Length: 262
Length: 366
Image 1 (cartoon, rainbow over the protein chains, first blue to last red):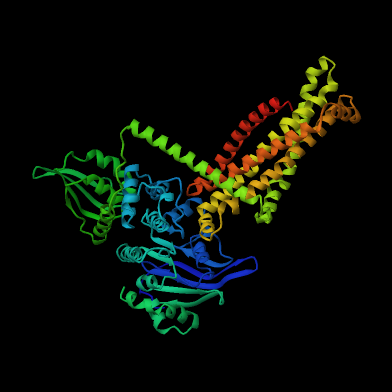
Image 2: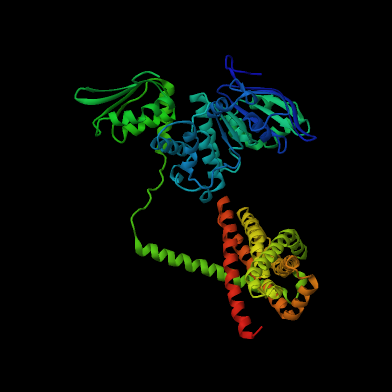
């Protein structure tokens, strides 16, 4: 579906379903994410976007179906192999999920300490650089309780990037950010994707962001309990036939003009 | 990994530190110490990264840390490596955290501590005033209190504490009777054990141990619940909706603690007496003998004094727990701190109050 020729798939999901007790969140979800693209998972609230993300990062096993990340299925991996795979991905949580007893710099240094033997000086330098990239260079020595929610989110992105991961999973990165910071974040995501070949899997419903950064997207729906659209967001905006997809892209029609060029 | 990915040499009288090949996290971690040791001192250095083919953040960190300020560079020729280095520098180029102001300043440190303590006491006093006023406003119209909430707290602080109180009370009664029987037997005074245990339980130990249970179970729960509500801005939301957080959140809890505490003390005392009676039975004194002793030596004032004291303990514990919760800071650690402060503050208040009551009862001749 509009795939860049030759790009390998870094994530493949086949027939994935998730049930909590008798309640089915989604079923028969299949898609693949290719290296270097910005892949957006979108949908209204309660449709299972964040649940799908948790399946992709191996936090829960799916009720049915297979998910392979960088060629491996989470369920098949034992201790060392799992750790090796965890080192190659980064996750930004919806609320940042920073450890409250550590400063921002220490939070970013944490995964570097867990996975490498770099000395403290190197870890600190990397942490300062990552925090600088998300605009938090001067807040590096503050505690999470002393900064705003949007700053926590950005610090969460810095921590996710600490190990230069091959795949970055971002859960609602731009929700709660001001437009300037949000646009800066979009630019950062695009430059990382284009320059380093980092693959992004982004859960969001910010239309401007989706159109600015998304190479491809899938859309989940609560009623359909599964995928209702897949493809280039710009093409979907123009030619989607599914009423929910059209409503999603059209409801915020006034916002489209500015983002279309990005 | 290649054997020697960096070289130190001198070209045109200037030391030159050159790297080649991939410089990723593995290489950077392995080379860090060696490269810093090998680096010639001073800024008269040419840092040659021209042959670096791959670079990640750790590699860029190594290069940047070696360069310091004002060193001449040869940038990597590989496009991706150059971009990685540029991005790393871009991050570092952002404003840095202010250097910590160090230096020992005794005067300002002492002054700051005094002002901080005064401000904290002022806040405590203000909260005491607010609570007292809200409580007084309740007296002419008690229906304004949220009784449903009071019921919930009565259940949580009282009903669910009964098993623990029964267990602890019985054991205390058994232990007191048994321990005192050893010296009393020498004098053949075992018949006075009911009097000893009865008076110490109803006047002192029942209320005190019950209050320690309340401080540990309920005071900390109040602090954690209110602390979490504060962190979630629920307290601010109440205030903005025109509801007084003290009347809404604090008073029901304090009233519940005050009502529940005499009951807990009574349960403790009563089960303690049962425990004592069991020990007395094993020593050969049947229950009628024990009750006769109790009736002869104890009067209602002993019990009433103990229960009144218990209500005062309940008030103090509820108040301290709520204050700790509402003055909690931000973040998960603050909630834990508030719970700790509630228990510690509650127990200290118990001891102080108990001392005051002891002097008071002695003066009044109760």
